[in-house]
Length: 230
Image 1 (spheres, helix red, strand yellow):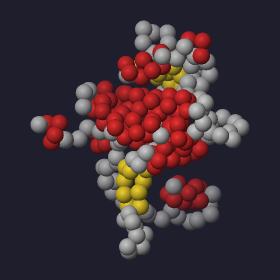
Image 2 (cartoon, rainbow, N blue to C red):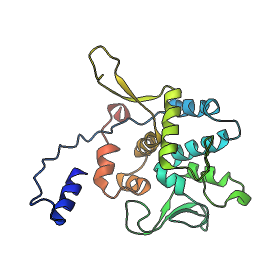
Image 3 (cartoon, one colour):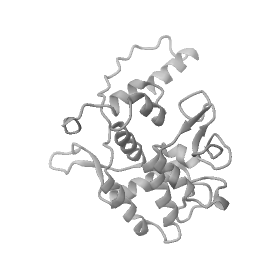
Image 4 (tube, one colour):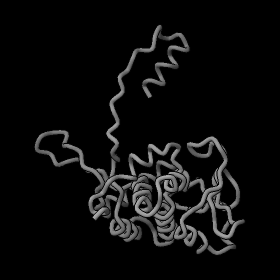
């Protein structure tokens, strides 16, 4: 972000020259680990404690959708039954994901396969209700469409309530407890990629995860695992 700002400042003649910035090397590791099936089920179980009974089914459906689809949270909230930049295509034998140009990190329109279990989840919705947004979640007091940051914070709150810690950082002061990061929406995508990396080729996983580069797939999801090898 700082480099982008400095390049802009140079173009606007606000500075004479963009300083050289040595970027830190990437570690090749995920910031937060993927969650397990048991942790996912634990997060589902605390939904009734976090929202009213009439709102709980919508959140349950969203979390199941994130777990089974590998969608990013903003994509899931934009996913529609009827058009839009990212939608469910029901014209083939099995549902597919239709993505318009520039709707995600790619610049090309695409029609992509989805996993069988996610397809079954989508088809469990009654045909008469397949209109508008696929995932409709609400928090108490909401007056407009769900905002991405509000939804993200709520899912992280579920992770904290369920006690699903995905990373620990050193304490700020000596003697303090380590700082914990609780499971959030992107941990579902990481779990999806990790599960499917065990049963398909890297090129297939790249398409399923919609990674622009195979390097991302290989770095974060296709790793040597001694237990898998054994």
